[in-house]
Length: 404
Length: 131
Image (tube, rainbow over all chains, first blue to last red; front, side, top):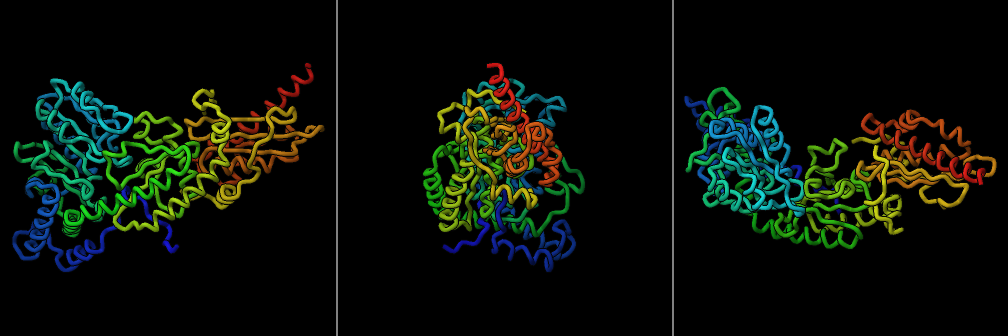
């Protein structure tokens, strides 16, 4: 078997820029370098045209009006602008926000910041499969609820929330609804003409575009208002000042165009690879898939290998690039807060690996990964006192551990 | 995270992995840590009649540094008296393995495991004397 190692299986952390995207970007760094805001000469006009073409491509992928797309530096900024911008604008109506414990930190932290500024927030716990119970969402709605934020595809476990149903509840109660779709573009079909969503965040680099560029969808009908978080030259209809990064924007547009055209075929291929990976790993004893397997993008497989600690496992499988928890928090020693919110035990949360498959993953990559995991899990379990106790029939949850 | 060569060596070729009979009166067992914290270390020592540690075994659930720390102490323990064993300090383990600050707790755990194993053995021996 000839595979090139390390094998990249961390597409949910970031993706390589597609060669077609990179090629399209380069002229906008050198030749067409104009400032899209320059109205007085052709350098500016050329850049502006490229920016508007890209805006159209982003809008097309999600069936929105290009005028509803605001450029940002990435999904983190989009989330901040959406959440803080809407909360502040509508704070006269109320100061309560609903979100979910398994959101990305780029949603949780802005909400926490608003709490410090006098807002109140409800962080809903999802069901053990990672999905939100609509009844619990309904029960959390208060007369002063102004904003809700629920992600479309979870970054750690890949589950797809029922955005349409949640959005309908928000509409009924006049709540502004924000959706973080950083992990969703090119993976699930998004139709903003139909979906009752007011604000939606996008990132380029999760969809084979460059890092450092993203967008926020801001609904026009009914019109959603925001307070700008970045003040300056009044770019992007005053919502986000700052000179537009033409080359990055061109890259995002091209990446989203490719996603729109190739999504269907690509997802079918990735689903076959995911099934192959899953069936291979399920030969191993005591493995648990985290998150619902059906209502989930095929790109993500998050699995806990019981009785094996995640960091040592990642060290053992250095031929494959995977992550334990999310890349943003893997420097800490805390187990994944997402898995904990699902009610996973700490040891299962500590033993989780996220495999994320993408455009350039091959069948050989998957087969190599399965063989490697099988051998390394066996080795680490030989080393594990917990595995030994499990084999002796000891119930680990009943042991009194000397916590440190 | 970048690991030192010594951590990698112990991690890839762990010394003295295994289990001794915990009911043997010459064997002391120390189990420290908790699955919830991401580390559990089981360290066992076996002494001869003159009280010298002649064998040491470990099993560890934890990160590479935790595995390396416990593997290293099994090497250090052999040939030592119980009192000498109890003198092993986490700082020496951390220094030998060049552990980064975020991994110092692994060496602390290894020191605790030694102390627990020695205490277990001493308790067994006291029981025997009383009997």
